[in-house]
Length: 342
View 1: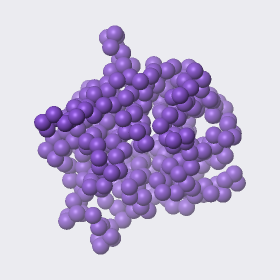
View 2: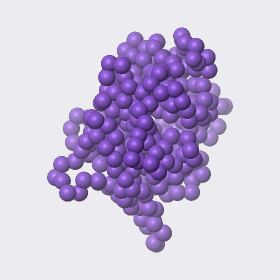
View 3: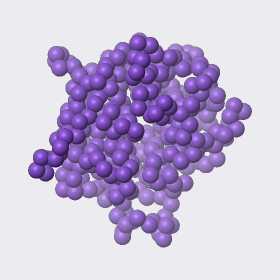
């Protein structure tokens, strides 16, 4: 899709509800497609799949489906070659895998790890492994992370069945786990990290689960809400504390000492996204309506100011940098999605 002829820098979509979860599609044939999750404080919530129409250069809603509770995270299968089925995953009360077609989205499987209990421990987040899309990891308020194996069965007629099983479950933290992310280090399959309410960043290796490494602990033991690995250099990751106005950059080779602090935001940070194509650019977004892009190649010298700033019309809940189109960043605030050309 060539949008360069139009030279529009910003495209906007208004949803019928507050947008919280959001993710870019990765498939090469679905370039300007995103999934959006509603944040409505009741059982009935929605997911919308939206796409940019080339002719009108407007966003249109292609599909809406029901979701129990708000989605804490949405991810398209990280399939940049388009060889897997067109799948979408959501986390909330459980991990769900959905199959997307042109006419409908239907639930392929619901992955539930506590079969013997009437209660579910809500999932705070999950990550889908880019090297092996048959691996997903979830984080939960019950202090555990679970690594799931996905099977996409043989095609039977038109039905290509998807099912999942627990590969491993581990107690990751002393309190609730708020985020999980696979690292690209060591082949990209086995290493992952998590953050949680105990204020620590911990790193795990699926080949040696008997121990973990604490990479960082918040000095005030504030809960850490998000973590995000650098897409080009697996030594670096970023994290942020609950209600914190700064983003901390860590180097796994220098545990427990931040290599940079990005602290120009004037309200709490809600989202972090590393550039897909550059090891030294990162975008942060916050309640101060700002999305800031930073160049961190000066590290370990202090990073004083961002190189780009965009002010939205509301508090920014989420930011996503398109992995297959590195000159586009998506943000959401209130009931709006905006994609910005950088």
